[in-house]
Length: 382
Figure 1: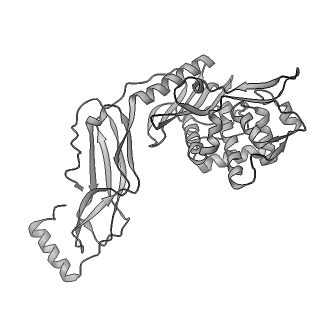
Figure 2 (figure 1 turned 120 degrees about the horizontal axis):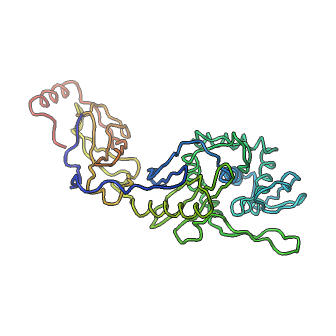
Figure 3 (figure 1 turned 30 degrees about the vertical axis):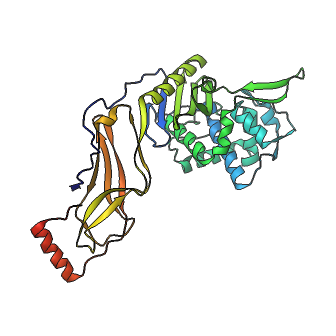
């Protein structure tokens, strides 16, 4: 194993490397850096839990899918069934027999958490709520949500309707990445639809407490049932850095607001992202065995950004590891090495390194001469 020399970026191994411990009264929670995928905090993140109305993130996602493929437009009108109209819990207050636009229904689901609007979508897309729930579960598996099963479109209590905090964070990240325009609905703080019995417009506010606190939040969805407790899947940006958070199993609206704010602030305050290399940068030059070139440049295919506790950069080491010298022939784009970031209190972070060019093999007599030279003089310096 060859450890590339001169790649320690003049960083000493000392100083604090971990952020302070965070404690929360939530039963389940996870906080993730959106850009790097680094988990900053987790508590029972893989424990099975009831998502309640946070299920509607998937309900809306299936609508976004159909907006993307052209099945729906925002102006498409969908009929309201008696089942949708009679649905209890939080409501958009659609009326049986009326046709409602997809855009209004989306706001009804996302801003007002309307169970009735969710049923309208379920019946329009799946034919029935049960069939729609099967589509939700299938889509969850496609995204990589391994602990999630949906039994309805709303999060209505059902012992088999389950997820995990980690799955909800993955789901939120997927929506943000794949549907940036549609994601904007999650930042809306109120929506007015329909009229009350006395003829006044019905205006309802978004239940996400972080949207009103000036902390950079721009989504996503609250949830509550007696069995589940109070939960929130949220995301937001500060200084061009986005975090995704799930916090669940709290005892009150007040606790949800306070604990989500505390965790959100803690994540932004105690961690930072550090750009180490850009895609295509030569990270190191590796020696080549019996090649028509003595060395090959090692590059990353993507930008290499790491999320670390603030202050721990002073204890960070960056190294390149490979079996060297590297045997030929080598094809451009072939993985030949590993870039590793490590340090006290830092879980090792590894990325593959690739050859930046083709390196052919020497002809027979050239290989003989090169081998003898290697035995006598050793590998050429990179």
